[in-house]
Structures are given as C-alpha cells and as structure tokens.
Amino acid sequence: MRKKMINLYELSGYLKDHDNYEILTHAYPDGDTLGSGFALCLALQQIGKNARVITTNIPSKFTYLLKGVKEQDFEAQTIISTDVAADSLLGSNMEKYAGRIDVCIDHHGSNTITAEEKFVDRFAAATCEIVYKLFRRMNVKITEQIADCLYTGISTDTGCFRYTNTTSETMRVAAQLMDFGCNTEYINKAMFETKSKTKIQIERAVYDTMTYCADGRCAIIYTTLDMFKSLDVGDDEMEGLASIPRQIEGVLMGITMREKEGGFFKISVRTNCGINASEFCSQFGGGGHPAAAGCTVEGTLDEVRNKLIEAAEKVLK
Image 1 (cartoon, rainbow, N blue to C red):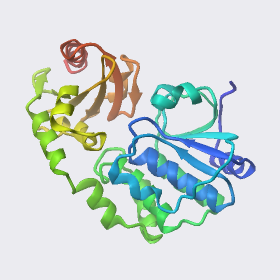
Image 2 (spheres, helix red, strand yellow; image 1 turned 180 degrees about the horizontal axis):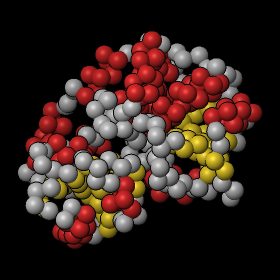
Image 3 (cartoon, one colour; image 1 turned 45 degrees about the vertical axis):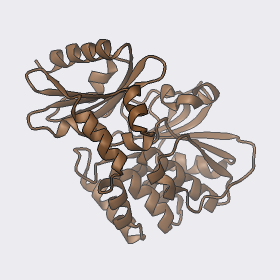
Image 4 (tube, rainbow, N blue to C red; image 1 turned 120 degrees about the vertical axis):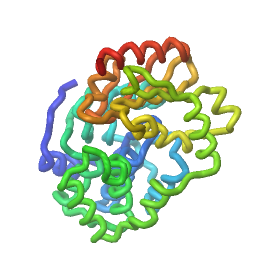
C-alpha cells in the first residue's frame, strides 16, 4: 500500500471529497482517541457526510462524548484512524481493518500504522489538537459538543496541562475551545477529581504491589487477573494507574504492568527528566511518546517483571 504524508490542506480536501466514513479508535480507548474520533464524526455529519465511530469498551466516564452523534446506516467506503500509532493497537478490530486504513491522523512520532495517507504531528500534545486545527481549515462550526470532545482529548493527554508535552499552542487551543463553550468544569471534575469507591480499592491494592529497582529510580506496580476478579474491577477503573509510580520522589521511570487474558502483560511506562519512554518500550515492540509509552510483554508476572527490571537498570545506570 502506498504511504503518503499529507498536510492539513490536503487532509481537509480529502475529507470533503470522500464519504461514508468509519473512524477507528485504539483498543482500551482513552480521552484522546475517543475525543478526536467523535469530534471528527460530528464534524463530518455536520457537512453532510455519513460517519460512525468504531470502538470497543468505552469507559463510562466518556459516554458524554457520544451526545449528538447520529446513527447512520451505510456501507463504509473510507476508513480513518484517530490516535492509533500501530496496527496492533486496533485490538479486536485489527483483523478486519489492518491494511485497509485510508487516512491516519495521529500525534505519535513512533507511528507505524499501515495507511494510505498519513497526517502525523509529533509536536502536537494530542490528536485532538490536530483535529481542532483541521476543523478550522475546513470551516467546520465548532459546536459546544465538538469543543467538549476536543478539550477532553487535550486535557487527558496532557494530564490537565501538567505534562511536558503541553505547549503554549496547546494552551491557546484549549482557550479557544473554552470560547466555543466547552464545559471545562464538568470535564475537569470527571476526568481528574472524581474516583469511584472501586477505584480507591484498586489503587490501594496497587500500592501494595510496588517495588523499586535501579537504586530507587524506577518504580513498578502491577495488576493481575485475580485482582480484577476479587475486586470486581472494570476497564473504567484502570485509567490513571500508570501515573502513580512516576509521582514518587526520586523516581525517573514508572512502570505499570497489567495482566491480560492470554498470558501477557500490557505495559505502561511514564518517565521524568528526559528519560525516553518510547525508546524503552521499542525494545519490546511498543512505542509512544518520549514521556509516555507502552508495549505488551508475554510471560508470567515474575518473568515479565524481571525483563522490565533488567531493561530499566540498563537505561538508568
């Protein structure tokens, strides 16, 4: 398949010239993939196109993003991915869609997804930041709901504007979304200030798993399938755990291990002080951003943890 990097002008023209869109998010969807996906769907429907979002297991706190999206019956002709950096991140949709994506919109510098056309801006804090600029190019009306979707992606990918990927441009885009009426009070409270009782339980259990290596410069936590069952935890409650280890004084690399069915662990890595999380995860077939990345590693808890400890000690020696 031909792979071509396109600019915003070309992307805008492409979206206007095509129709019958299916918009793909990544597995274990977060605020940016959902926010950019549903914002794009709303914008395409606004300009008279057929569009729907293909996603799975939307965490309950993100269901407000679906507001105003019309259910449309059509045969898909154009496949777009938003915030999906690799084919493997399509999850259960990989078999159906890998190699069929027409346009990829993303902000991961490590992007390797197979797509005919790509717009990737690694300097954007979130894919939603890119999509906002795309809408301005397309003269899409930024409704309050579209603004909510875009602000959700930007705020969650920047940790409410605390992470190092936050730029002055990010703040300007967020300010403009406020001018368009996004409900920052609701979104900030829902994303960053509200925890369920179950979330408190899983956090307490996770703190008990914490171990250190590399003279305390790396902290590792984990969740197991047994923990899921005993606490009756859903995917909703797992978001945000990856930030816990990095918050500890003196820790430069925080690693979160999450056991999945099939004998593997989903790994999330968060780093401080210029340690490159994406490079660390690339040795396990993953990637992401310099300060936030992920991968999957097969093996038992001890096997996977030992592999990660060995790799972390080499990086942090």
